[in-house]
Image 1 (cartoon, rainbow, N blue to C red):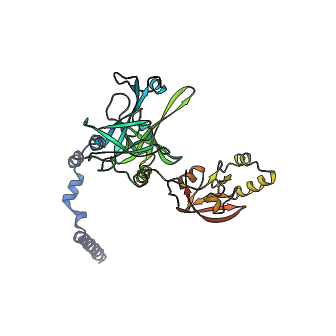
Image 2: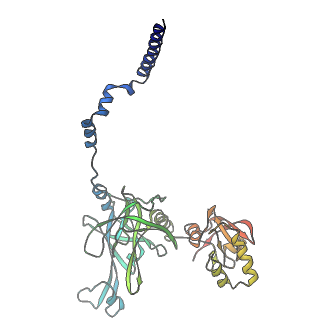
Image 3: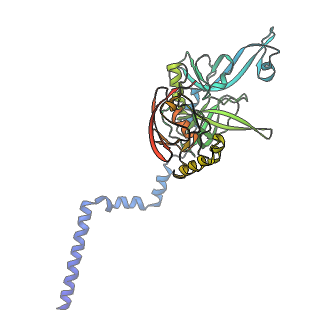
Length: 389
């Protein structure tokens, strides 16, 4: 009797298990497909799937589409007397039958729209009376200067030509340190349209623009060329700078961020120049206590008060106004020396570079909100920017 009962229990739970399995098969057939299981389990089929993946073939296809948007620029000055220093110190041409020379400059440029507008560096056109643009296919065009901005070292040209390939300027910068980038331009080595590869090494703000530092090699003549990412999108306009260290010239590879170039281009098209807002702060704005004391000649009591106010701030935040332009925008808004600015338009200010970046690309007559501390008390004021000379 006990044996029959035991067998009954086994049969009962076996039937329950089979019922549950049947429900899974009915409602989840894909999970129990023999065909799928065979496909997943067969090594030969797995190898076949991997083999169909197209191998990476490099960036040649992308560059084929990008390179025609980059041009070479030959800039030439007016004729100069042969005894002029420019005739001795710079690349020059001497027209036959004359007692004169012309200063020559080579650079690169980028088509940014179908209307024939080109962006290049301002120094490429230094002292230029004429500029010839040479396309990748060898075609030569005469360029007209639309506008130039020495502060950002950018210039806008136009040719009577509708380019098939362009590199539009973006209004936002999404590039990051570590991104793969390609520099395209024509260096001073008789090589047309060279391409060098590297990464974005650093990003920073200086004077009036945001910059990209890259280890993609640049040479003289690359100035004004394109810096593109691995998708072929323009991230910056290249510019080669140099500095002397112990008598040796060290070259630094930079590019002006495309979004900042877009702002300059828009200003040049609308006004013929870049109109930048002016806040009216003078002196060496900093949070460095010793520097402030030395610049302003603070007495011991003022030093003690300033040290206390700086200690109340989050570490590294804020800049101290060390001098203010009388009757300037900041002065009219009630700001004073020794006020500590911590935010502009809700953006934290941690350095002088942050302060410059917050206002340099803003237009005159634009209103900004400044948060600051005065004698330890938090305050806020609105400032209408003036015109920068």
